[in-house]
Length: 270
Ligand SMILES: C[S@@+](CC[C@H](N)C(=O)[O-])C[C@H]1O[C@@H](n2cnc3c(N)ncnc32)[C@H](O)[C@@H]1O
Image 1 (tube, rainbow, N blue to C red):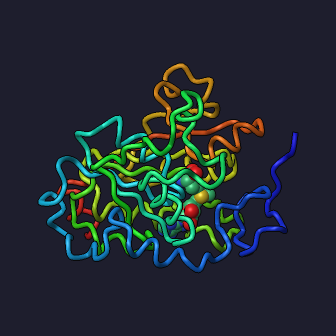
Image 2 (cartoon, rainbow, N blue to C red):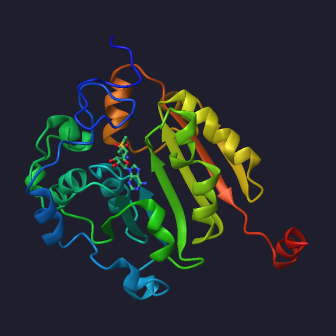
């Protein structure tokens, strides 16, 4: 079985991810820009909705950051029509795949097809896009321009880029810098769920949550697919499927944001 290595030399963008031969960060695809621009599933001026998302959404808002080709949210949104889901992805060449899937076009590579679709031999052309799912093409660092305080009920981070060099640690989506950013729009009691096969990134993340004063780690597993509690109803992402087929164990944590009271905030200012 092939062992993971830090960086696959074939990766066209030298993206520093833990990748094999099939780096998700695709070479620039010329038509991607147009496909994303024309997709009805991509919200074009999201900042205009800041503070008013409830006027557009039918239920609590959940955000996946680094959504990739979108299969996780497509399944989650179909399972929970009572919620609203937003997938955030910074690369058009990746988001393009999610847009195509939402339009019912067969996935280009079999590995990105829905596992349920393959198991049940469902024709991807019969796929009905969930009405409660949309995408944003942007860097997560800009999310406070899009969501106001208390607008987001939960965050999903799946197989986030590990940024293995210490000097890049603040780019990791579970760094304390990013946790502080999420605090700007999460509700009190808002949940963050994070999955990865990368143990070094996972250990770093557990430490970041343990040290963050406003976050409480609720659950941790180092082998999600064999965990009788946390493994229930798990939805596999594209990366999760590929990495677990390689024999990698999947780690998952669930953390809850505890908004500080006004008095506690006053005290920290003193
Ligand atoms: C390793 S892939 C995982 C994709 C998917 N979540 C999965 O599990 O299959 C990470 C994705 O996160 C995206 N990403 C990384 N940093 C981001 C950021 N700051 N804002 C938005 N997307 C980001 C990358 O472009 C990439 O598509």
